Length: 467
Image (cartoon, rainbow, N blue to C red):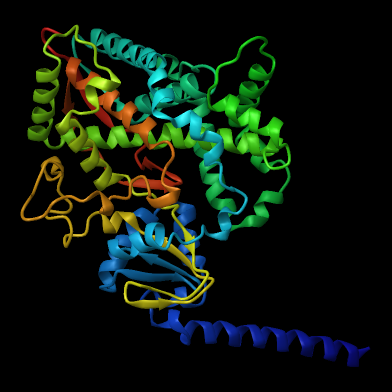
């Protein structure tokens, strides 16, 4: 018996030693050994995984690029972050590298949604979107009346409610009226779902722990079930919205578009269609109230285009407003930096001057690229004027703009987002004065989407005279 135990222990120790040798070889030999980065990242992804779980990676990666004076970082044994724009363009446009294997279960759904994001279809959604904004405006009016003509509004949560209502009203069968009720139950469940997804992506075994996920995000799951059940029980003609496109895809191919897939797609739509847009508008407001001269320029353009308080602000009337578009572009450049553009090398490739071997995850780091002073003069300053022409010898080029990703896998809903952002900002500054509430933290955390660490962002709101 002792002989057998000795043999088994010897085999186990040999395997441990073999694996340790492989880790050391991979850490210190081969192409990735030359890529700068934290020492521990050569051996383990644990430090990076911890940053992702905590949601602090948005704040820590930039200083790492500066510390190592590089545009490429090795942050795990087989993962690099890439921050120079030409290499990012190569990854997502020129070479169009395949998606990272982590996304294999999310096979392409663009064909399913194409009709749901066509310009003609989106234009037809305007009355629904305007109706949600009318409710938002009533909330502002009520709050200002209660405060004697002035109110401090938590725009982070209020705009989140508005974007959630817009997404549900236009695409999922009807608004949940969170704007007026300010019921945060669903939003808290959504936040938990995003944190749980981040944790499960780093500790996959948690997906198989019974009841944990269902318990933590039960409100979110119940809402999705209600949306599906309500639509399937309807008789007669049904709207040709995104919800129906998903359900039709399930009927046509129940294997590819399974019942589980329906629920995953609906949750993704809710996140992508509400949280990202609301944070983008909130960040735009943050930048405007912290830069009052830029705010004045925007108000001047809106007043020139809509001189009467009764003028209707619409999709078509805002799409060509140059300064409004410049404000949004600049706010997105500074604050909306997608962190889920991971691609995968299927052959050796050169990025940022380094050879990257096959089977490496390459993650474009848009935040650093879109604030690169070599491309953007006064890179961290809010300068909408750079999108209107030459600024300090440089012209803003959209090929260096990655807020909606790029290439064949760019954000399919970006035109929906643009319409919504123009409408919200245009109507808001047309009727209300917005002002800075000083002393607030701008620090954010990220779990797929970003949020303010303090949990809110307050803005002063006052009805404009004559409006």
